[in-house]
Amino acid sequence: MRKHIVAGNWKMNNDLAQTQTLISELKKQSKTSNAEVMIAPSYTNLWPAFQATREEGEIEVVAQNMHFAENGAYTGEVNASMLKSIGIKTVILGHSERRAYYNETDDSLAKKVDAALANDMRIIFCFGEELQDRKAGNEENIVESQIKNALFHLDASAFKHIILAYEPVWAIGTGETASPEQAQNMHAFIRKTLATKYGDDVANSVSILYGGSVKPNNAKEIFGKPDVDGGLIGGASLKAEDFYAIVNAF
Ligand code: PEP
Image (cartoon, rainbow, N blue to C red; front, side, top):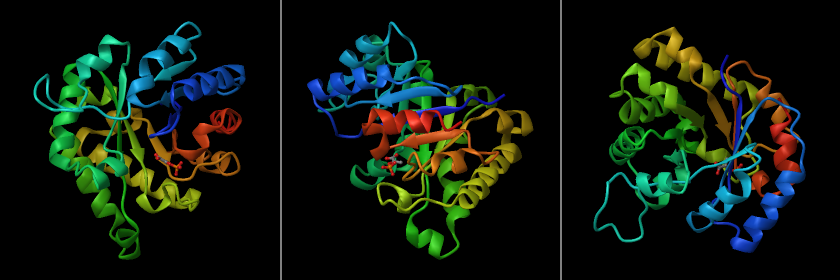
């Protein structure tokens, strides 16, 4: 059975004290679903967040990004071994904000994917079309090329370490959500794309998350769709109650 996963992407929010407060609020919530829970604080708060959650083990702390190089003159960057050295085992790659504001391309993402896998890290790989692509009816072509260009050089075995996150850019932080049917149609298309290249076993084993204005009031309907295995949550992950209402929507 595929894993259900709900991951909170905190983006550039929460200083140290706010991180500690939010984590203690999260720890007060009770989980009634079988979903794996992840949070992605900023780099500076990864270590304290890891320390604050490791005993209980219910919440995995993950990184929002990393560089592909092993070491070197990349001012301001963080690599996989640095993340691993503080206990971080999963990294989000390819978020649309990274693609839009920091020029992340399919090529650089393919390198990041390789570096993460070479370091035995799990990846949440994000992709999704922009509004103009959807208006032009081009969303499947865009999504297919984002997946193929960054991931299809991999062996089938690599997909044990990959979680996909479909995030239509027009739905991120806008309050506008893909309808459950739009999400299901795209997730089914993604699975079909994987099956064509790697076969049904791989396609049916990869968790595909939906991201884009998931809130407590719409999570149940979206997660109720057969090919939606969880969510990548931005805004609503910053409030413990809302986040756990989403976690418990399964
Ligand atoms: C995200 O940033 O990945 C995201 C889905 O944000 P939001 O839930 O705020 O739309």
